[in-house]
Image (cartoon, rainbow, N blue to C red; front, side):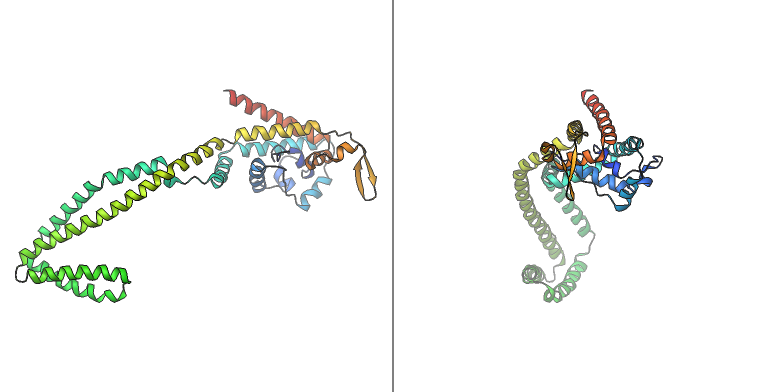
Length: 318
């Protein structure tokens, strides 16, 4: 037997409900957090049902008079249905579903499309950056630039000791290249400026080419994983609407309620009570649970479930 939906198990409320129904949550000690967690748990679990009642709830149950139980079941059922049909429940359910299918959006069609757009835009971005660099250097006096670079090299050399081996090797190479440039253009600041601008442009293009290569490799890998993403997304989308599962849970509950024989006789054997008809002894735990709750609340719960199911079926046909 599949796990019965909490909101289908209105009869469980019989053991929890006080006679007054003006404020059923206050009267029973049931909280919206109870409803929130148990509704999702019972909708999504494979088998059995669960409801964690407190001792206070069970004490209240003993004071419920005959004739008031159906009214109480209806009141709690209405609150549960209102919650399950709310946006809060839909969000709660989708959050749970994401944990089940774990769709990785990094490999979605949209993410891959954006990666391709970014790669296609690289040339334009590089051209714009080079133009901005040229404009910045154009405003600088060649002699002042040459002096500023010499001073900058001193600071860069002092920082080498704090770098790891790979960074130090790369930085040392660049420092050596700039020093050579300064030496060969000694006394020729205009020539130094020309060579330094060309050096920076070349370095920028090399860095971009390296990054583009990495991004192309990353894009190729993401495209390979896109197939798995589509399968996961299809599974997620197929279960995104919880109503088919809800309809099945209600059908299961209605069938179970209809199967319970409330006239089944029991006998006491030592400290235990056993069914006179051995066929009932092998019934599942939820069947026996509903039997103990009694006909009045269970039949009211079945009626409520039937009405809800009818509304769901009607909405499904529209």
